[in-house]
Length: 200
Image 1 (cartoon, rainbow, N blue to C red):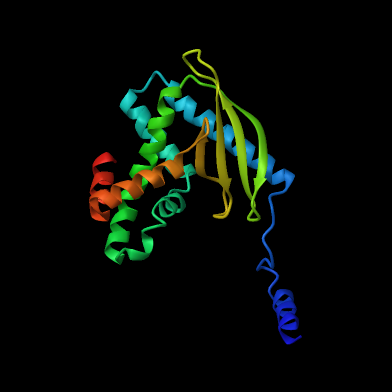
Image 2 (image 1 turned 180 degrees about the vertical axis):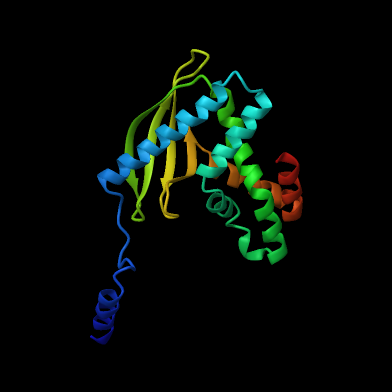
């Protein structure tokens, strides 16, 4: 009987600490959808800007992704199977190589769609932490069939960030995790970090 009473008192005295996680409200879901629409608008604007070179466009595009993607969260999730066995030095080296590698991974997949158009189809609350999946259809700039995307978003950091992207059923984070796992098993973790540095 004492423990429930103590828990109630703690909750009452510390209103700033949520007693339970909550799913995203309809208003928050709409906010997440607007975030993705604005991100796509800004990204495509950079890619369509004929006044700058392709290399400069890539620099700006990568900067945009760096500011709007949860790089640390994504990167740690990708190596979750191996993290317990890493030394502090290995983890720090990975963290340093991570931003450029993750941004380039997304940039390579999105850069060729500078003339595309993104239309949000729906948004759905995911889990009990206020996360939202934004479903969007992207037209093919070459006239092919539209492809479907799911933008996983989170506001845990105080502002909306993309935590993962699924394109035509291919989950980029899970695919990257499988690739990293295979690479580590064949070559070791230090070799992976070297590969990331060279790719970035």
